[in-house]
Image (cartoon, rainbow, N blue to C red):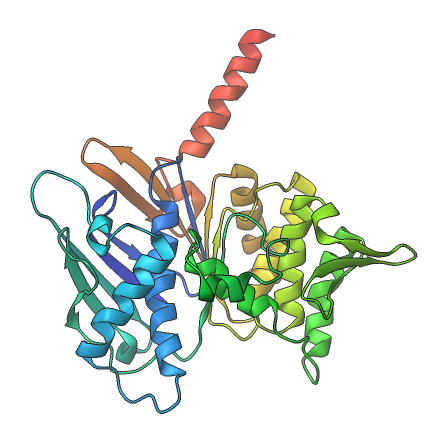
Length: 349
């Protein structure tokens, strides 16, 4: 479990200390406030450690190894022209410092890099152990329609795609789960398949379809984009890929979903939290924010711990406000705009 991140001079953030819940963590804020940067930076750091730890013959982490491993993953996931471009932009030379604290202190890591850095970070404190479980990152767009041949193309040619796309596509191609956990998978899949009107299938040619009872297979590009996002979740649940991971990072999960499907999405997210996955979400949706809070306060989810973060721009960069409940946040821009819209509607009346 990720407990805390300390940041100094990362992109739009001058300085911040984020304390996370072991369950659900929701980040809200205007466009350009760095929500995606936070998710991708945390994902890249955890994924880099997990990937190295799974390699055959992996020994204990060393500074000489990890200073390049962390840098490569940050660049591949956030896609700057060079590592130093991730440091906060201001006149003169600047240094970005990042520290990650985990429940297991052997996984703690802190590193830094300057605006002049090209391909390596400076390890200030090395993690003594590897991340035991890899994270999952869901990008804003769905990936089922670009899946055919994507991983092979990405590995053999230069593509202007974030590496998180490749990572997720690899998980989408895993075989369906069999055995004792099938019942758990089936219970999670049932509401998703009812909403989609069918089951997600992968054929031998590497193409995804929605198998609709009585209608046969429907090509995934013909399925509504909002339903394709649900289909991606369903696929990762059916393979066990999502259930086996320790972390889920999801950027704007509400994109292209109507309120009815957003409610279903909120329920699925909390089911994953209750399964032991630490979830991080960046969202613009007040509806999703409220739905998650309502469900997390309900009887079924009272064991689900939550944490909320509001990002707001200032003259000196982006500030972060945090609390265990939405009503603890004073600078919730989403709510402010909702109230302003209501006022404009009343004036128009």
